[in-house]
Length: 260
Image (cartoon, rainbow, N blue to C red; front, top):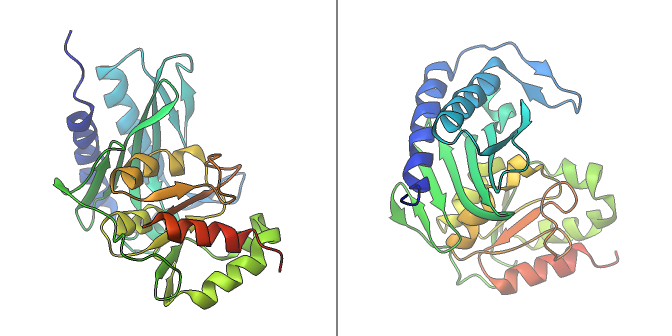
């Protein structure tokens, strides 16, 4: 049996979900609050259902972990990680700085990741060795080695105060050193980093469905990555940092974890 073409399949998934999202974008949708107070709409739920049905039809033995509907087949070595609308706050505000995240972990490794922005029709696919933006290879802007003069992105700076208060002094120092600081965040910020349009993107806390697709894209584009503390505990335990150079990552981690 030939090896599945996961790249083409993931692009098919994104084509399918993107068509539906475009038909619903800009409309008023009822917003529910989940247990963690984050918003969710019927679009989030419908997108995940679309993706789950397509995956299980093609790979019935594979596992799925999704933000809205939990886990199936947890013992499979193939685990699909889904975030149907990463950046629901942007989606419900009519801002196209959100995306659909589709990842595949193989044997516990972050193997393939896709970031899709269906309104702008922008898409990154990564497999740790390369990153494609709308089908063409892209690389980070590795000329930037320091925070001075850099463009720094974060989804919501308040999350530092809420979730990593011991690093708030370091974050304030990063804010001061950056030339440009913007909340062009969620998955879209990491896409900008992969394309060489930003130098540093970081989030203090993420769930697995927020981060699984980012890692193969960032690594494939040549980014240096770590958790908030310089390690590899990505997600809720450690958040995520992606930098365009190892020097910039090291400076960021050092400042965040210094005593202020």
